[in-house]
Image (cartoon, rainbow, N blue to C red; front, side):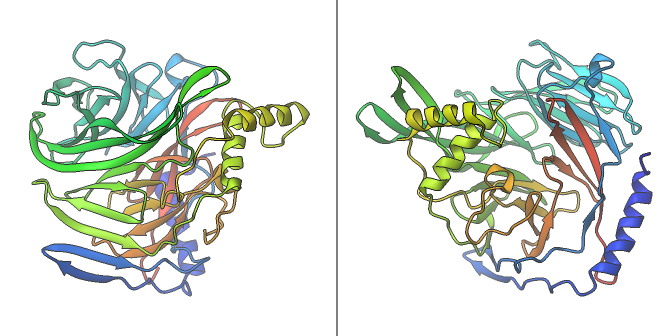
Amino acid sequence: MKLPLAATVVALAAAACQRDRDAPATPAAQTRDSAGIEVVENPRPPFGSRLGWRIAPAPSLAVGSSEGDAPHLLHDVVDALRLPDGRIVVADGGSNELRVFDASGTHAATWGGEGEGPGEFTSLGGTDRWRGDSLVAWNRHGPYAAIFDSRGNTGRSIRLAGTDPATFAASLGSGGVLAFREGYQLVSRTGDATLHELRRHYEILGGEGRVAASLGEFPGRLFYTATMMGTSIVMRLPFSPSIAVAPWGGLAVVAPNRGYEIRAFGTDGTLRRIVRRDHDPVPTAPAHREAFFVGFLRERGFSPEVAAGEEEALEQVRQTMGDIPLPETLPAFAALVTDALDHLWVREFRILDGEFEIPSQEVSEGPLWSVFDPDGHVLGFVETPLDLRIYEIGADYLLGHTTDELGVESVELWPLARPGPDG
């Protein structure tokens, strides 16, 4: 039986107060001004420490199943959010639909769908909040986004301005849009093998889709092109760096993860804040390449326990991709999420869901996050459920996506308690 969210949070808060009165003190951050830019330098939270926040041992609600009505059969979920009245909106990429479920998990409505008309999508990429109680949803590729009111009516569409195709990256909460245009730059060439770097130019656009400010160009993922077994292949470099983006208290965060530095821009395009956290770069090694090969096979249906036939497949992968280069260092972090209270959650980078140990990395069963307050001061670590891909963090819940061993997808609501210093 599922407990009501409010009751579960009260129980979690009481337990957290009892257990965490002796938790380590919040690490001290140093803030300084540099030519009008606020720079916040943070230490790493102590090893083994955790904030006194507690996540329930099980979700209070789950939508999605292996059988039943079509709306409950989810495929390629790309995003989800919770409306103020408790309804959950799931962006289902397989159907290009926004599927709406009530607070009990019952399907209530379907918005959007496959197509190129108003409120329709060809490659649904995500959904987020808009002005008032509206929400926005956008195509994964291309300059199209649609605004829906709380009843699912399509108010209008947005076409991102510019001669080059632009892609929607995030809603900034006030009707503004963070978008990017991208291209590739040659990094190196060895024989018939090349390495290219994705370069993204980020812009802030107004609610009508017109460019309001430029944030500049940022280095993104690395792509490797080579001939393997007589076939030309293009693939993302293992452990390639990437760019994380998020709105944060009226600012727009654009953060390449080659180092532990979070840059936040105003809507006029000026750099307002730089947040750093102590981090020891981890040089890549042959063991990381081997871990990538295991992950490569696992994504294609092989289990973690390598049987005889799978060992043969693993050896074939080694021979085929043994020369693939690696970045000089592993990414400094994996993802960003801003919660409803303007805390910034930064997820630690892990290999094989944490099974592969990285020197100087915190050992945890589930994903580990450094949480920063609205001013950029680190509060400490929070560990979230294993295999839960988090889309939204509310004041008292996590909303995320899971896939079970049979490939059945679901979206789950997990209660979260945040007791104060006195419990």
